[in-house]
Image (cartoon, rainbow, N blue to C red):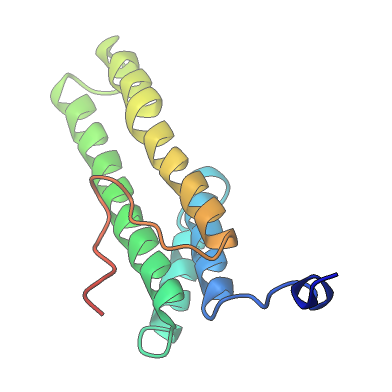
Length: 136
């Protein structure tokens, strides 16, 4: 046996707990507890804004930026519904179906990939909406 086989599991990279927490809160904001999970994500981001290791800081940046984009897209969908005549119009269903099948599901997919990368101790930049991690 080689010595590396007897060492046991490798320790978690610095900031992995923050990264996993940020990604989990992002997904909770989209799927389970909208608003409340976003506030918890803001608290996590504020608490670790200066002392988070690069892995945690990267995932915090991604999830905060993506959450703001998600909120902006949701507001835009509501404005579009109102512009098309309000919530009693048939066009409302078209906007809602397009929003959920394109925008919301894409944001959730980004979060799932981000959570998987965080659990693996890897950096992840959300496509299209993410913030660069290399400017630390």
